[in-house]
Length: 296
Image (cartoon, rainbow, N blue to C red; front, side, top):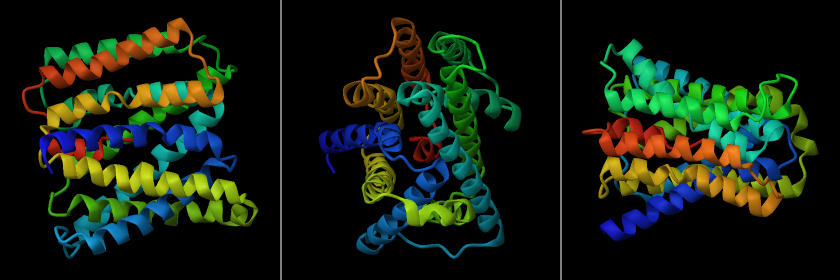
């Protein structure tokens, strides 16, 4: 893969991740069914990808690996469910921008969990993201759907940050594809009790949206992202993926007429600028974190 093709793969992956909320909105199924379907199709796609790839070496899992993957799967399940709840309640734009708060959570939690000093650019990130979230919220009223949706989205970002840190704390012995496959298996198993009774009532069109979510927005996007990191600097990858909310909001604007207000756009710009500045000012972003911190 050349640097140009790797950069193209990154943008395609960011676009696919950005369409996650759109497909979640198109599917009229409950969030539990959406997450179960997404994880199930992702597992099938990852199995095919792993069987065709010669570079993936499957490691024998030890007890500590199982514990970490189980914890990661539970966090991923909670992250996805809360994100799709945010989409259903508050819309794609609110959900996407609320989730984009996860880098700020990561900065704070890294300082607490790993006792790392928070740098000036990271403090700036937290400040800009906080201001952006305030602007994204049209009104601070818990009875408002937009506010409730934003709270679900922020919870989604928090859970995703915890997922990233849990993977960082892992041994690193397991390939990204093997880890993603195991985590999606855990997600599907966790959601089956809630999704199972309603699977027979899912529309045929919804199965299409779930398949697109699992195959393209999860397995393919993740594979493109990991493959591109072999050529592109992690810092560049982080900047490219800051475009993810832009793709998602634009698609929702065109498809659903979700026209963001000027205040929401300003808040979104602040959040995206904060992510880009933080990536550019960081000396050496951790590649291990970026491999798991890429998508809603």
